Length: 329
Length: 269
Image (cartoon, rainbow over all chains, first blue to last red; front, side):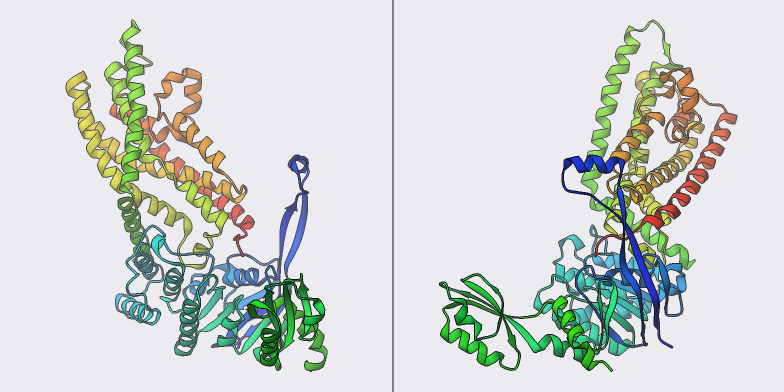
């Protein structure tokens, strides 16, 4: 049986809208317009034990809302979810003892004290015995290479160092289910890689189930075989990640800046122009001819700056939709 | 026993935080002294020009004992965690406590008590010195039994004030910025608890209303014991009322918490 089962899960938020301006601020005091936002609309999926699944989607697609429901932080408006045999929002102790979530933008560490103090607190919260605690802590600090920082006040740690501490704090009790919400956000490449490698090893060694959201396709590509794409609260795709990466990688964006004005006609032959303002341009190019294309641009045009980027996730999703009819059976 | 160990760890965390921010603690003490100084000069002037030796039921030495001890007690019972709770709610850091097997209210209370242990020790020493000085300079009289009793009651006062302000913090579920509420409540509880001057100063009618509220059990009640204005029965009744209020306000906080959780959206992301 799948360790995470989600069926028709829905979450609506109430919010208030306000027109721009002072006058409308006063109007709002007496008469607020209440609106409902459907953050997650009846999504369903299953995740098997030991899987690492990438949960992808643009900002505001409902990724974090879904993770919050699966961790029991918020109660869904409708539908059901069973994680490790429990309804998360009932917040049973047995559920919590085998569960953990790491949020890149949140901290569970006490900022005024060294991370080690939070680890000790978690040791007691999760009722971990001394030998087990020491073994796990030593293992984690070694893998994440943070032995030097665990006694330093958290406030004084760099983001990369702090994120690694968050992982230790979250994993001391060896959760069977681990949710990661943007765990590498804002990190430099080296820290990103350390964390990625760590997640992969952790999954292989412990057989824990991991659901991961990230803005960096790199994270997802290096960790997950399966991806779930969510867009505007509905699941747009659920299946092999390779399909997604193929689509995303098929087209690359070349961003160039020129020393002088270059006529549009000179650029058009390299690919579809997405943006153009005379001295800079964004060109969509096929991956297969990328090398030749780049070379030709660099050789023939007066380039000062040159970048190759992935297409944004939003666009990849609409691309997947376009070709959806032919590839999905 | 394992369930207890998580909270003893939190107490230790609280003590460590207090040690980490000892300078802040020192300045808090100094701030408290200023209010007491102002009061000292004010009351000295009032008693000096008055024809009566006893005002509002307090002799001059008794009043000195009251205002100095009130300054100390208001300081030791003041919470400040309401701002942290509001931050937890607003920024979504509260989520941690929903995901981990630890309850928020005991965590906050125990952390607060831990932070206060150091202050409590300092304050016992300061009070002992103050009372001795007052005894020899002004001839203030104390029954040793009363002083002992007060220091058994002060922890209850601390607990009562912490549940009151825990309740007040719940405002943050409904208001994104609840600072105004906290500051207002800070002033109200300071005055109504007798933390500035004895409630008798407000006149009989006001006093009889204030006596029905929980605040007076934080400062006014324990200080009346020290000043020797209470007999055995009054004291027993007071302790019972203190415990009653702790339970009642705690109950209220649970209700507010449950209502608040429905509003909680774990902001961010």
